[in-house]
Amino acid sequence: MAEVVILGSAQDGGVPHAGCLCAHCRVARRDPAARRRPASLGVRVGDAWLIIDATSAFEEQLHMLWGRRPASAGHDAERYRPPETVIISHAHTGHYTGLWLLDKSVLAAQSVNVLAPPLTAALLSANEPWSAMMRDGYIELAALEWEQPRELLPGVSISPIEVPHRSEWPTDTAAFQITGDAASLLYLPDIDFWDEWKLDVAEAVAGVDIAILDGSFWDAPTSPDVPHPPVRETMDRLQAIADAGGCRIIFTHLNHSNPLVGDGTPERAELVRRGYEVAYDGMVIEI
Ligand SMILES: [Zn+2]
Ligand SMILES: [Zn+2]
Ligand SMILES: [Zn+2]
Image (cartoon, rainbow, N blue to C red; front, top):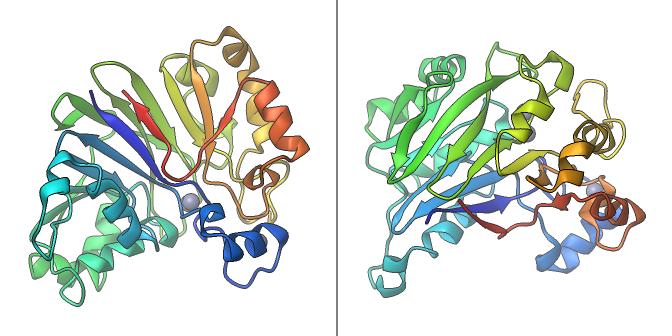
């Protein structure tokens, strides 16, 4: 059986968020258990593991997943190795800049396979410090092929699906269909608008056992420059699937302002009543 681990459930800046004194950020500074690291997903089969996205909390997220491997329990060396593969969903800084920890100044990794969507891979390979990390052999970069499932861990195939999302450089953004022996899962932490996607979100979600979706904002985004579908709109679109109970639908990538960040809010109660879930750091799902 493979497991998927939520290594981070916040939007790119995490909770607490730089420069913010809101109630959620104050609570998270007081209570480490209330922190949410930037969105990242781990996948593990036995001792084999990989991570989707390298965030500003990459060190903690690496260690969190590495520690779940059976072999890690008896590991008595002073160092441990990163996974063979790190997948990058897109080139927004919250999702990839943690790769610098693989460079010689920190971990000095050996040829970690970094897989990224085509335009994102081109951007990384054309710019420092990532191109130097490739030249020096700390990482090897390769482009993902859209909708081509690859068995990246024993018994687990991962297929990248392009989604519409702010493309400044320009770059591209992937969601992932992750299929294990027991279940299939859609991981889609960032999208601008459901109606701009070539797939119908209800059909895509109905086709998997678990969907982990963009839950950045409860209502409107805090800035028109950062569009995301509000959780309420997504719940409306998927209500029939949630009511039927065939698919777990979990929201992740929460902005620090999102009332779903806190426990006991009316919004959280509405979401649960309607049959949905909120991701949390350390959440484990078997597939
Ligand atoms: Zn993001
Ligand atoms: Zn805040
Ligand atoms: Zn993004």
